[in-house]
Amino acid sequence: MTDAPPQDAAAIRDAALDALERAGSADALEAWRVEYLGRSGRMTQVLRGVAQLPPDERRAAGAAANEAKTVLEQRLADRRAEIEAALAEGLGADAIDVTLPGRPAPNGRYHPSTIVMREIEAIFRGMGFQVAEGPEVEWDRYNFEMLNIPKDHPARDMFDTFWLDANRDPDGGFTTLLRTHTSPMQARIMEAHQPPIRVIVPGKCYRYEATDATHESQFHQIEGLAVDKGITFANLKHTLFQFARQMFGPETRIRFRCDYFPFVEPGVDMAIEWRGDWLEILGAGMVHPNVLRAAGYDPDVYTGFAFGMGPERIAMLKYGINDVRHFLANDVRFLRQFR
Ligand code: YSA
Image (cartoon, rainbow, N blue to C red; front, side, top):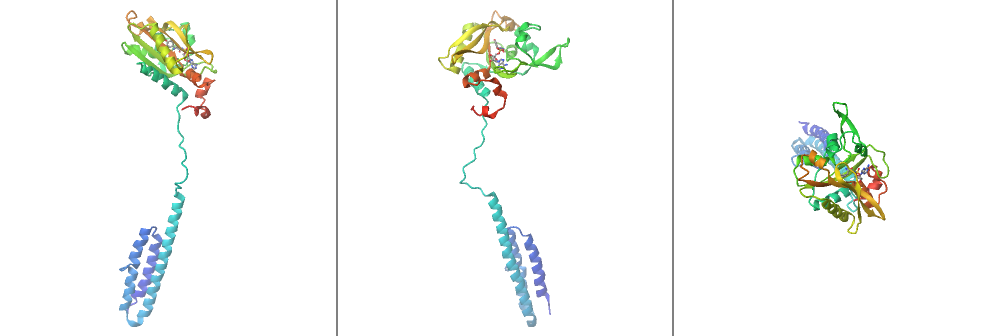
C-alpha cells in the first residue's frame, strides 16, 4: 500500500499555491500552469498515479487529488484576474489622451539688445566689415593710454570707471578696470594686425555712474574701425549714412556735429531725426595720429575712421522704449514683447 498520491497532492498543492503568489506576470502564470497543471505537470502526474493504487485506496486518493487540482485551477483564475486588474490600473494612470490639444512649449526669445546688435552687425558685414570681440576686464593702457588719454588727462572724467583692485602699478595706482567703452579694441586690433582694417566690435561696457532713463551702469557698444591708405572723412560719413538709412529707413535725416574725443581728430557725434527730435546715437571721427602711432602705424601713410554706438539707445528709438533701465530689469512682461 502506498499513501504517496494523497500526500503528494496536498504537498504539491501547498507548494503550488506558494509559487502562485510569487508569480507576478502573465508569463510567470503560464510557466506556473505548465509546471503544475500542464500535460506533464506535477498535479497531473499525481492524478495519473491514482490509477496505479490498490482499488480500495483509489476513491479517497482520487478525490483528494481532484480537489487539490480544483483548488489550483480556481486560484490560478483568481490570480490571473488580479494581475490583469493591476496591469489595467497601471496603464490607466499612464494613459495618454491623444485627442487633447498639445501644450505649447515655452519658447525663449532674443533680448532686444541682441536683436538690435545682430541687425547692426548684419548691416556692417554687408559693407565688408569683420566682427571681433575683446575682453571686458581691460588694462588702463588699452582703455585710456593708447587712446591718447594719458594719466591725469581731464578726458578721463568723461568715463566714470569701475577700477579693479587686482593689479596696481609701482605707485599704487589702479591698472585694470571694467572697460568703459569698446574703443580699447581699436588699439588691440591695430597692435595685432596690419592695414587694411575694417572691423566692428560689439560688447558690454561698464560705467560707475548714476543711472537714469538714458544711462545704465552696464550697457553695450558697437565700435567700428577702418584703417587704410587714403581713408577720409567722406568715407566715414558715407559709411554712417548708409548704416543709418538701412537701420532707420531710406528717408532718415542725419545730423553731424563737432564733438570731442581724445582719440579722434576731428571728432563728431551723429544724431538722427526721430519723431520730430534729433537723437544722438554715436560718437565718431578720424583716428587721431597719436593713436595710430601708439599702435605702430605711420600716420603719414595710414589714416582711419572710428565710431562707437550704443545699441540700447538705438533699440529705444526703434521700439519706443522710454527707459534704458528696462533692458536689465529682467521683467518678462517687457522681454516678451521682442522676437
Ligand atoms: C567716439 C569716437 C570714436 O572714434 C570711437 C568711439 C567713440 C565713442 C566713445 N568711445 C564713447 O564711448 N562715447 S560715448 O561715451 O558718447 O558713448 C557712445 C554711446 O554709448 C552713446 O552714444 C550711447 O549710445 C552709449 N552709452 C554711453 N554711456 C551709456 C550708453 N548707453 C547706456 N548707458 C550709458 N551709461
